[in-house]
Length: 306
Image (tube, rainbow, N blue to C red):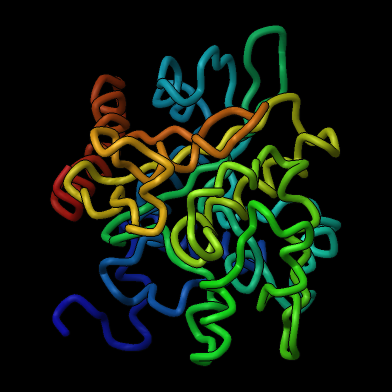
């Protein structure tokens, strides 16, 4: 395939002047490169190409993100991390694999922006970055299950079942099915009662990834890692498939507002809603900054057509 690089050429997926710094950072932080990173459609590579210069230059990050809608009241950017998983203790809290690492077999956030706002409040914005994906992913246990086990997923009624974990493939059976997501869902602001009109487990499809991100956000709030934690998604405006609501979830939204992020926000209670912004909106802000690396800016324009 012309859009997949040969083995041994991972440097070529990154903006050349940044490639060594990016690869060194990934090694130093023990972050796994995705298995599909050699695919030029890789979201992980795209996120690093756009956001890594902001990590290197926090003043640039402030200029690029200040007055940007998803960081209201920003005063200072104090750090940016990629494939962020939170404190080590969260692995046990979520029941995820101890053998996992950032970016692999754990709930990992594409980019986490650490910043201070008004009254020096410590804030974390968790960024889910999408490029060409047609959705937000799916539950791997359900996706790879046998026909009989898939039937269990389709029969699960999370709005009425007092203990959905008893029937969930993530918590029953062998392998690594030890996830503790169900224990924390309600306390994380995810109201299962809203799924009364949904047939089957609502987390079989794209809401699975969003649920895990909001669990991580809740843990950061509960443990005092920050005063404010929000989750946002950033994608390309022309990728309209990303926002499609699967048929089984359409009871969550009006037909006129059929958007997967809007559907997700209907199930949240007492936590900040998820917001979506486009790469084009981000770059419109970057374009106003004086003295940016024009080589980097031109690379993004030629590589990603923004």
